Amino acid sequence: MKTMLFSVLLLSILSAPVLAESVGKISFFVGAVKLQPKDAPEARAAKINQPVADGDRILTEKADRAEVTLKDGSVLRISEESDIIIACPNAKTVSPTIQKGKIWGNIKKLSQRSYDFEVTTGTATAAIRGTVFRMDNNPADSMTSVAVYDGKVAVGPGTELKKSLEASGAFKERKEVSGPEEVPGPFEVTLMDWVTIVKGQQINVQKGGKYSQFKFDQKKDAADEWVKFNRERDAATPVKHEE
Image (tube, rainbow, N blue to C red):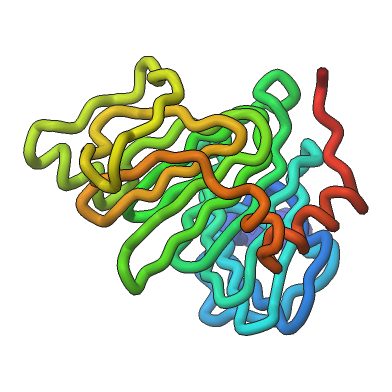
């Protein structure tokens, strides 16, 4: 009888769903932020210190904001009216997908973390070094923009653009990232190769892959409410970067 009970218990343990290992936690939020775990039927109200794992979806409405602190101390913040999926395609990659909305990242250098960090939309992918950056995805016009406040970011095709380029034979795997350059005039070059933007630069990428790269107006940018919020949070809870 005991052997039978042990066998049933062991079978129930082995057949129970395994929880995905968390990559971080909800460390701060404003408003009624919701989190929907992978395969869960619906999103529910997020809680402070709630684990965030592969496939989790974070949803914000007007006036909501969320902050996720990753295990290494890096920080990812999500603006109002956003829909973000945290993906971990393998053990060494964390790759949030911006379905709509804005994020701000304060990410430690590669030497301080054991994983690659990439943010993607259908239009563009941003491979993050040790960087403070923001990335916006506007589904109304399928425009993706990336701005760098410290460090540098490599920007290449997003999921849908990659498929389009692969179908035409124009897609190139990322091997070597080009140096930072200004692209003269708006939207004249197609994002088939990876390009690098550095502190004070921004890149806007259209749905078809044409992009514009330029130095953004830092004084005007500093007056933006989303930027001010993140600057204040970064000052209040600083991320420690190696020199």
